[in-house]
Length: 524
Image (cartoon, rainbow, N blue to C red; front, side, top):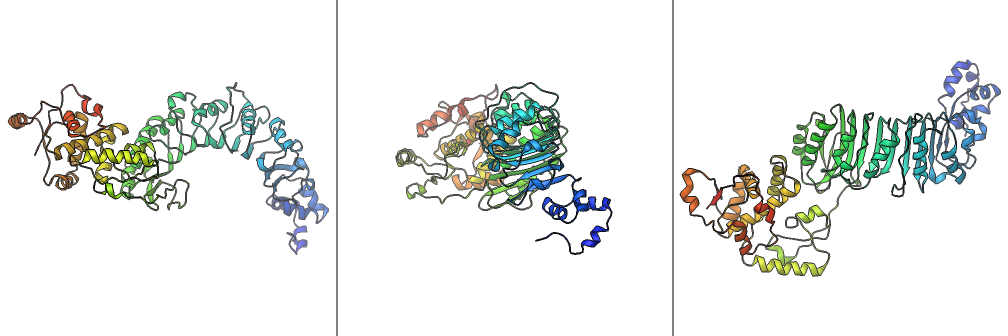
């Protein structure tokens, strides 16, 4: 099918200047049609810079002078493509899948002095390693500004420290797969980066091991495949002059509010020049739109964050996404929970959906089933033996979420301390349920105070579990007689052990947060 319009005579009367302007916007296939039309058109086209897109066998380099070609995009295997002849190439997009052995050798050995943009996808073997070293040296590509690498894996890359050369002018680096531990190498290889897009596909390491900072970096777009709220965000101390930031990642079952509060603290501390912020954070919680409103108050650049609801408890907190992306890589489709009738009266179920550490930490609140029947039988035996002697008090899921958030944000507890304090608060409530009066430890007392402050929630909890309002008896001169009636010869921790509660956290019960011990009591 010809691309030449039928009214050819009208084109021929146009001046050369106008024809040049027209031809500059045509693809290589259409230009070939014009070349065959007459000698005048052929002469004009021979002076143009050509962008060549390899799509199938019909694309032939021989119709153009190699010095004309300034851009090549390879979407098809072309054995006739000889990079040695492309002396004026400025933009080169290759696909390792379609490259011949000779072309692979050429790309790491040739001198392409005018090359400004290099993109190679589906990289296998050690080509990625060689391209990084070649680009960093700046000798083969002295004009290179933009480098984009699509690595199939980054596990086998062997990168070694190098000397910085003045020929290294790479300003924009885009890598689809990288490791936390190798960030130092990138900043050392490319010290003048101003734009970095990267996908970190492993679990974050302690950023104390990352020392190579980059003060020229102003744009950072990162995808965190394993987004740990307590490590991922410390990366920002390596790039203090950031102006624009976009984060995409998955925080799993962590609370989005906790993540964004810490992110706001880190970003404001390490990147004071930040002006633009975008995010796409996925999680699996029952947080709703109100959480988005709370998040927006913590940092002025969070004002565009919205909570997008997916199926089940899938959530996405995003700025530049309008609807929840169904079928995304982080979406969780829970397996049906298999309930065991023998445990139903105790309110504890088990499923085989996961054995993640965070889930195991909340084992008594989440629905899991051990993969090994033997472990389940052993646990069932221990549980029935212990629970038959006393009534167990369990906090509702809403109470758990509130206390976890309150203790971390208001009382500045770590995640582990908050969870341990909540578990021991349940043990403390269980003791009170079984007529054991006594004093909580300081950490348990903090959790108890936090529970009481949510008056509606605490009243509902007290009525449900105790049939009355469970009062807190603070120490003061007016209630000394009432306090002395309580039996304090045995600590509450020892009383609970005698009752039969197992696997208690002794640190939570013995740690002294202040010099003066807490004298608060309970009263019924």
